[in-house]
Image (cartoon, rainbow, N blue to C red):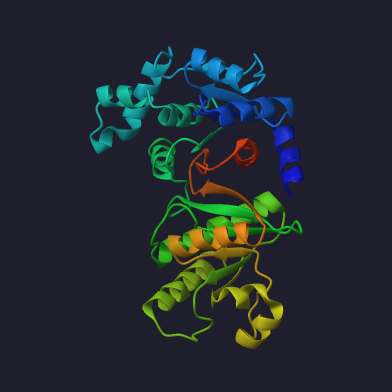
Length: 325
């Protein structure tokens, strides 16, 4: 699965900006992206500091990798004007925009917004809310999406890919938002894996086995998703075993179009989604790639602050694929 994603990224040759350029993990990832031909990285940070960290870590950073300091960049005023135009309706002044563009997260997303980079990957040294906030304010929500959310691409030990959503952004989505999360996750699963999505909206109930407002929320979300995308294979509400194990599905959800073979799992809230992906990763031995952002009008992705250089390389490759157009 990962080899295939790398091969796809290699053919695209996209420019990916890495805002946390002074972090040794990011520098090492940039080195690998160049050596493996997966993307053309741009590092943000103080050039002297980036090279100092690279030398201290024994990283042979290629001289071809651009290092841009947002604080001193000659383009900062242009970027500030772009950000000012995007946010002046929210009361942002030009002076505030100029100050904000000194932030590496905003500068990186503005590079994408202005077409000077194809995608942005950050989060190794910044909290997820900061990464997502910058991406939303600069890139905005994509047409056709109700909100920005996230998914994890989970690769099981046997190589099978699963998509989990939303595990990193929205604490308590309403039914329409949950439906949008599921639809976006389905399309991303198809795009990244080549598989037809089989979408399960998860609950602690299967087909009315429990009566609770939380169950009703998932039922409503499933109905909305089916109405919006009748071409997709969608079912809910389902407990995980009824969505994943054919023999259990036959007993608990006879007649389910998924037949216990779901590959896209839509969790009802952030609590369950975050817990679920970490259990699958730590106990199930799956590789977890993400959180990958979806619903943005541009390619930008978040990282876990516990990530390593491999994670950054893989998310950068996925970002390059997302930025195909």
